[in-house]
Length: 396
Ligand code: XIL
Image 1 (cartoon, rainbow, N blue to C red):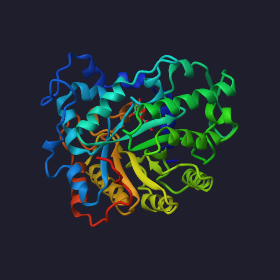
Image 2: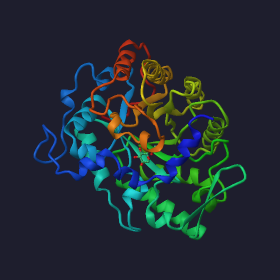
Image 3: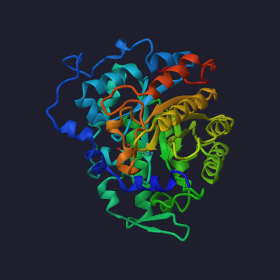
Image 4: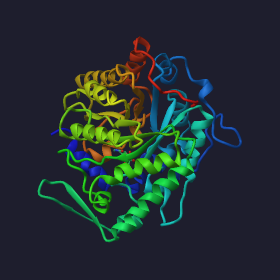
């Protein structure tokens, strides 16, 4: 099986994993303001973007090349901050819009870190992908404490909560409405529902599924989000749907069903966490079939990991995977954004979750660009891909 088994681990990680990261160590050190930062407000560094930066090269196709941002690093590391501003024209909060961060105590919100990132994006003329509203993972401790997990006969996880179903439904509604309202008008795309499917294509038996007695929570979440911010493009987001198979087919059936029910879904996000030990997925065909449902598609969390150390052969394979992942998006006019899951290997989630693997990003541990960075530049420079369909619409 592909990367599936290891990715299941993600659910078990939470803020502790974030705190164990190099970024947290940096954040704990005395903070110096990034260079060129004005006395007040976030740094506005985008004017210094080189002509060969990803964010300038992507204009040819109107594709937005974005990155996930580790906000601890953004506060602490000037080199990180400069790259985030100058290379990318879209940002996704890696963690700080997740439920465990925004509502650490029941009924008390903390938007501070997410607000800072949205302000940074605004100052640097970047769009924001909101991530993520409905998920089984990184729930606040007060909610997680009510959950017990078991495994069913097929090996799929089953979560149950001690809270009554009616309370669970009310909690989710309030969470979605409050968060989308808080950021109203400032989010380009929202990952409304994240990872609702098992590898075998069955619906994930999380507490939302249990409280609704089925996948009805998905439609409800999209409707609530749309009411709260009618302008935001609303996405379903998942991993391993880059490969044709039961999971991708199930995501396709779900998207088709939501469209048929006139649920306000605008797009499907393909996380694209790839590993060079497996074959390259039939990504373009999968993007295209979802696009043919009149949905936008996006690669939302691209990283390409390998077993360490990286030999010359592995490097060549990484280069090829990076090129193909971007070309697949460019080939599909409804593929409106291509987002990497962080850009520096020192800040990557990969080594903590996939032991022995790493080197998954465009920049090395010291934030020097790696060959895959040049590969993306070359692909963007060479592309004759047409302008994206519908990626504009009043956004910076
Ligand atoms: C990861 C973050 O990168 C880590 O810092 C955190 O500890 C766990 O979550 N799919 C997703 C992302 O949708 O939110 C996950 O991000 C990676 C897998």
